[in-house]
Image (cartoon, rainbow, N blue to C red):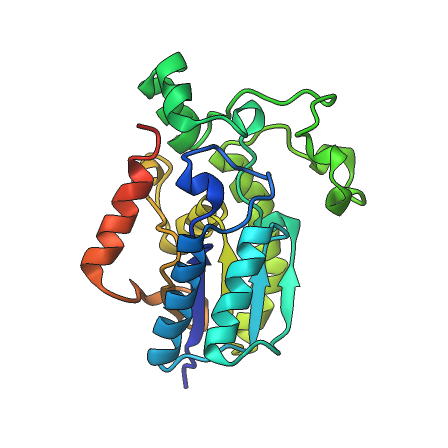
Length: 249
């Protein structure tokens, strides 16, 4: 008999810097009012879908934590255990963090910024250790080894840091048939979707993860994808993904 494992991936709702079209990365930015509304909508969609969860995983960044809290509140599941880990953080955008995406495109050109944002193996310019934006200045990473602290990351780097958490923490939940919610970020979720959906490196630049829209997976005993779909109105999903794709402009 085959038992299906259930997984939902959710990108946090719109943050204040998403709204202002600013590179965020590991900078800890709160949800906008629109992002809070997106999280509430996601919770209602999940509830109306008849889903419940046994465990939740988030990054250690406020926008993911706030989104998870709102979703669980809407579902009447605020009591659920939540596991937070830095490996689910957004991609570290290095020296681009805090810069406006359009201004950066005007300075360096759309092609260069698109390469930094969407390519698999090209990281943005790195931060110096002395820069106040470097993660070594943040108490939540104080116990990490220096070589674990990124000064910039490409998507390949994010894949390398996310997949150990996938195998060590999320896979055991799925194998135990715990219905699992992962609330994270555009690029940490791109890494997971790339792995789950077996997306090739040359195809990954075209993958856009919309904010606040649940992506539901059913997985077989070997954790191969049986089915995957975004929950909610299809036109709204496409419009939201399009907004992500246009953010550099």
